[in-house]
Image 1 (cartoon, chains in turn blue, green):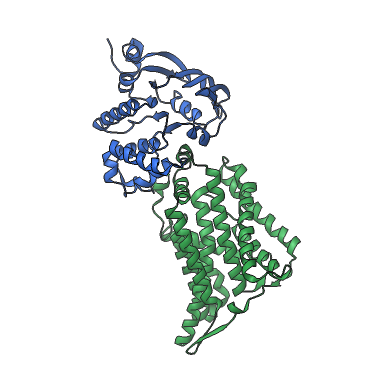
Image 2 (tube, chains in turn cyan, green):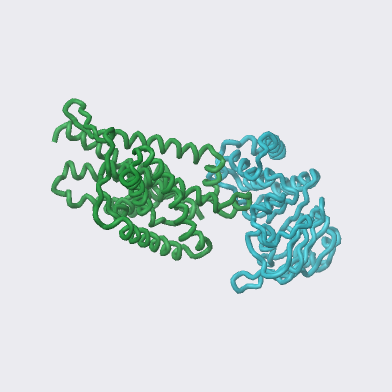
Length: 236
Length: 297
């Protein structure tokens, strides 16, 4: 579904991505793990057209999206839940979700999807009229995911959805990721919580200072000595 | 100084405050979206007034049609200013955009001097705005009634658009988080243009009504009102529409009352705005309706 070939990104003098290749097949969960500053967020931001690569190609459903506008990419069904949630704090929950459907014109379908989001996140339904900024971090993360779902994505990308959340809520979030995946959405997940991510992922990539150093099936990576040492903090 | 005089000054102050409010909204909306102080806003106001003037005097169009044309053309003009002077600098440091704004302002002012001439022009006042209305022994020129009414209607429309339409929602979203808005597929450039368009329409209407109240047109007529309305926006809490309206009224009423009740200070009427600015910045830097700034990071 998504194919990244030899992607290079330069950020004002820094060579942030050094020719990475990533393949996200349809209906799979793929995860990208790595330390802070490895280039995980940059990868997602480049896919969405927020950052431009200096070399390389990004193909989405056999269309070259390397130089497409963010809006066009969203319209093609790819959406990013940004790091740190980034909900519109000054807008109500319902308004946030409505804006998620900004590119869509099918009013009755939008309404139906909103009901689905409320079903998936009953907490949001209770807080429909509350300003997003007044909610807890976990609720804001739910809203950020819900807002992204309102675009009716085929490919959902998430940047550190568990960041700064209590362990119990992290568990909920991962359950929800699985549920969204069951509904037929392809998922590209970035996580520092490598264990949780690899447990649900079909395939994983390990990114280190802008290069992919390791890749493999989720379980395979989970049991890999290097990964365990570097990211899971376990020694055998 | 009797009651009648007070009422007369009150009407004056309210209409001046309305005009300040209309112009202040333009500053505050643009700041809300781009974090930019649009120094050319006062000049857009001037351009709107001149367009109405020429429609009426050179093209001999009826006043209502002239006003409408002025609003439409000024809207387009405002959008062009944004596309030419600010959009190319979207990813530049804020100081560059600010310098570009000052440049745009000088350019428009000097072009106006060349095109319209530096000699003052008399804005033609349609009869219905120039009647003297007598209530008891208070006599008030009718334009002073129309200004707050028209301002009120425009404000209601604006608040409706901002609070209840999808575009308004998108405006608020862009003002909060530009990048997250892009990630939802919102065309930020379109929203910015829309914002400049609205601000410019309000400036045009403000300019026209300014012309009806003070029918003396010069190319630099936007300078002082522009500066004062920027202050009004800051006093109210820049970025907040209701704050801009509040600031506009405080400034308008304050200025008129100083002249009315302290005639010896008449020469300082313009200074009032700046003193108010200093006081507000010292006591409540975020403005009267402003929230604490930490939220904006």
